[in-house]
Amino acid sequence: MKDKLIEMFQLQEDLNRRINENWREIRSHEDFARATWIECAELVDSLPWKWWKKQEADLNNVKIEIIDIWHFIMSYILLDYPDIGEAIESEEIQYFLKALKEDFHNINIDGQYINHYLGETDYYKKLIFLTERVAEGFLKQNIKEGIFFFGLLVKNTLSFDELYLLYIGKNILNHIRQEKGYNEGQYKKIFDGIEDNYYLFQIVKNVNSRENLEKEIRKTFDILNT
Image 1: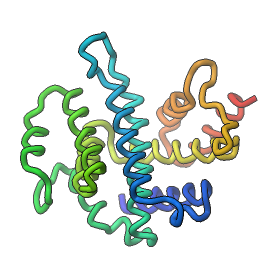
Image 2 (image 1 turned 135 degrees about the vertical axis):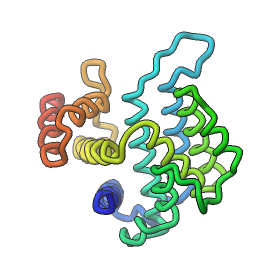
Image 3 (image 1 turned 90 degrees about the horizontal axis):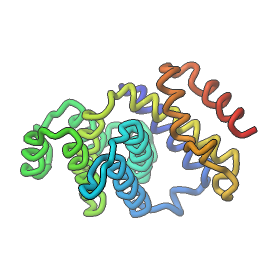
Image 4 (image 1 turned 60 degrees about the vertical axis):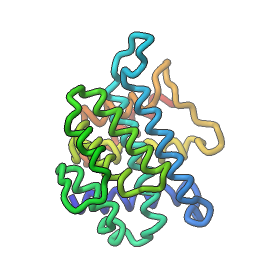
């Protein structure tokens, strides 16, 4: 797990530098906090929360939104810990790892929230509750609490290995987007009426290994972009 964390943090650093070499000077904690809670809103919108209309859960998109949130959480941490070795040993990441094991010992978290989480039996309501707590943590600058609930959200939706593979895949897609002019507004995300994230999810699901992932993703998007 440690090696995978190191790789993900290094890839996030590389992506941030690709977008802007001086990203540490021009981006702030507020930027990444805002990006996090906005992605949380998009995640909730993939779940059936609208009581006035029929809505099906899109759990595949929930996983994609979790990966997007993870991008911004890592970037937030990297602002405080430019050294990746220190980043993965940070208290923030220790909270994340504790949450993956549902370890509630020696953490500074509102007990009422923990009790609500443990008592919620409706799966979709539980995911919405956890996502709202992530957003709340970043809005209130209670970052460790936000990251802890992000860890619980991950635990309830996908394995760490799936988080890793989807992150690697999305990182590759983000590089492709930059190569195709995303920053300049030249890249199109929709192919034949379907967003690029959907194609990405299917590739990761079918390949299911780190070794062949980039080749398959690039091959697919080369075809889509022709």
